[in-house]
Amino acid sequence: MSQINVTRSSMPSFEEYCNEIKELWDSRWLTNMGVKHKCFEEGLLSYLNSDNVKLYANGHLALENILEAYDFPKNSEVITTPFTFASTTHSIVRAGLKPVMCDINKYDYTIDVNLIEGLITEKTVAIMPVHVYGNLCDVDRIKEIAIKHNLKVIYDAAHAFAVTYNGISSANFGDASMFSFHATKVFNSIEGGALFFRDAAFSQKLDQLKNFGISGQESVSLIGGNGKMNEFAAAMGVCNLRHLDEEIAKRAKVYERYCERLGNVKRICLNTIQENVKTNYAYFPVVFDGYKYSRDEIFEKLIAEKIIARKYFFPLTNTFDCYKEYEFYGAEKTPVASYISGRVLTLPMYADLALEDVDKICDIILQ
Ligand SMILES: *Cc1c(COP(=O)(O)O)cnc(C)c1O
Image (cartoon, rainbow, N blue to C red; front, side, top):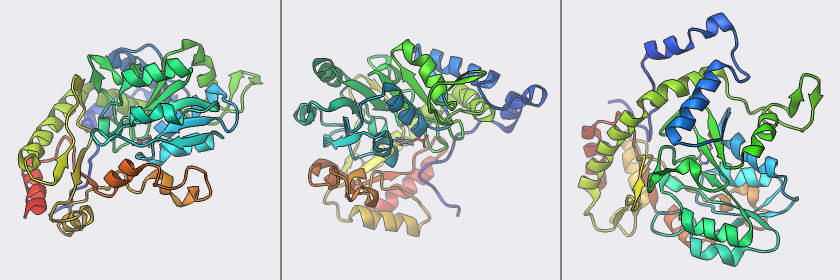
């Protein structure tokens, strides 16, 4: 039997992709904002009903670039959470800023909005919350706090592509939102990312920051890096976007099957879909909270059957070795994140996961 991984990349048919990239053999324009790049941008703006977007080689560079674009004073503080992928925390530190770790809430694992104001100091410039597993943060409350204290809000929305709240796309909350189009995400462009942003005045600066700061044929006005998305990645994005709604509908079937099988088991806590939210079923996190087997035992039992689940997110970013010497190091200040991180396992979840395989996974957990 072949291995079941935590995810499996969505792809268009071979023919559809070949057809999409065919013209590149005539134009020989392979990167630097070509026709596929433009087509992908337009497709995204229309799909997410948004006004401003920039595409990147990956999501992480989008986070780095928006922090750079704001040009905050060195050592300014950014309130964020450690229950996330390395990228969120790294982007803040790499921008010369200080992450201030806020705990998560135990209901949807996003930032605990009741704790944010207690962490604000005169050095705080921004909040970088994470829409964990595609669960949206309390965007209303965060907006209120940000307005009251004059803070920027930059969402790590890597998990939340195509999620809406009261019909509003996750691209349209805060000052900016980053999506990752990495191969493992709900929607991919092989590698890739996008930044949606509110203030159109940032457009030119962002264009320059992702292209070495080049501002004209003979002028370089910023010390930018290289974050450009190439034409082959953009073409994959264009193709995958055509099929995204179908893919999410298939994910919903997998989600329902898992819920049927695991929903009423004592000491197994499932992630519930939030009110007024249309989800993308990005992940299937399960918290083993005093269940007859620990999270790590379940993880091993699944591996023995060639099923690869993932401990997202363990370890917390505030316990990474590279942060040992940093002020925010240590999980004591984020006890809920620490609790969940020690007990959560994300089970395989992708559009083509057979329901028989879901049953098999559940049988192993329940036996
Ligand atoms: C995937 C991911 C990123 C980074 O995205 P890349 O496109 O791989 O750079 C950032 N934050 C979170 C929460 C992610 O899951």
